[in-house]
Length: 201
Image 1 (cartoon, rainbow, N blue to C red):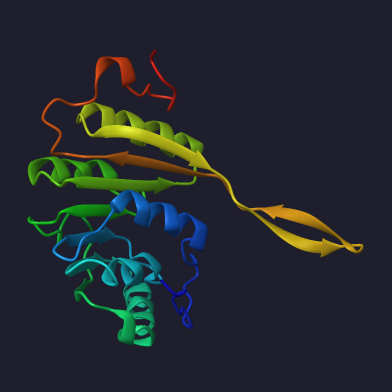
Image 2: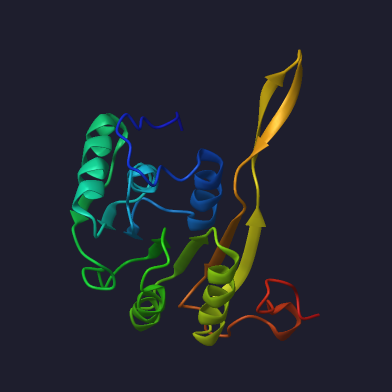
């Protein structure tokens, strides 16, 4: 898939392309899927999901950010295959009841959003967090709702030239919570994820 165009920016900035690649891999969207997003911001996740899913519902509570999402969607219209609906709502209000996959790009009201995911039995739930304390609370919230499948922590560094050689600038670490509200058995006891993201083995 070619890189998406993001000619319009928002103060929060887009989710980094390397992080988006992991998100899309974990979502594993299919042409018949309905994808829902909380906090569309620049629209980076929205656009890439719209290249794969059949229906996309993106929520953004800030009008100016929703406008940025809309403009960036227009800049990528030739590659979008999904029916995309943008909603100026604060989740969980405005979330569809028939979503197959859900991405949370922010931590505001995340517990209520997770409750909605459980109630509507969303198959794939992913939440990205950049702050350690929020990551801990979010992990507990996923566990309490029997959603948690894995916690992934990763950090990306980009090289730059320094005195004729290559040095690196590091992006902030990202904590990615991956789960499902459709698991019948839950996670096997031998493979349960601890609240700190480690294994309980």
